Image (cartoon, rainbow, N blue to C red):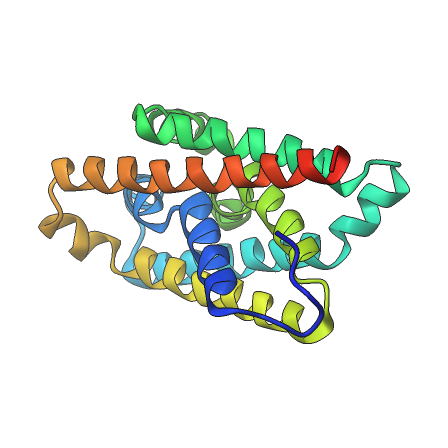
Length: 214
C-alpha cells in the first residue's frame, strides 16, 4: 500500500526491513560465503565480504532511485511490475519453504567459482546475484514506489543500508556462527522467513491488481 507523502509509519519500515532481509537472506549467505572463500586468509575474507556487500547494496540503491524511471522509459506501469515482482518474490518464498533456494545458490556458486578469478569473486557471484539478486532488485523498485516522498525514500535507503550492515557482519562471523547453529535450526529459520516473504509477496500482487482494477 502506497504511503501518503511524508508519512512513514513504523509498520511500513518494518515490512521493508523484513522484505530486504528475507530476499537477501544473510543467514543463507553465510554457508555459501564460507564455501566460496575456502583457502582464503582472514584478511582476504574481510576484504571480499566488505567489497561484495558494498557493491551489492550500491546496486540495490541504484535500482531504488532510478528503477521507476527505467520502467517508465520501457512503458511498463508500476502496477504491472508490482504484480510481476510479487509473483517473483512468491517463487523465491516457495523455494525457501521447500528448501530449494539454498541448493540452487550453492550449485550456481560452485559453477561460477570454477570459471572466475579469485579477485572478482566479491563482484560475481557475491554482490551479483547472491546479494543483489532478482528478488532483492524487485523489492527495491517496488518499495521505492511506496516510499515516494524524498524524506520517506531516505528512510527506506537507511533500512537497506542497515540490512547491508547485517549482511557484512554475518559474512564476517560466518565461520564462528556456523559452529553454533545446527542445520535443523537453519532449515526452520529459512522456512519461517519463506512464509513471511510469501505473505508480503501476495500483498504486492493484491496492491497491483487493485491499482489496475480498483
